[in-house]
Length: 97
Image (tube, rainbow, N blue to C red):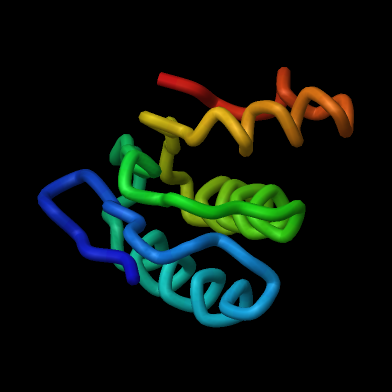
């Protein structure tokens, strides 16, 4: 689902409502274990399916990281996620690398 490789979190599961709670928890656990001031890359290159819950999960991860003093950048976001973000008017809030 989410693997940590040094300073990168690699998400491999579909980001759908069915597993949003699990993704949220796994990402929060990983971000909470990162040292303050670290920059964590969240690699979404293996994510094949997204729905609007993916944006909710990503924004929750960003809030968690901010509380921990951890920086986050998204890499390889799926085009469908970027399209949803544009549709909802939140694309400028995504910290793309």
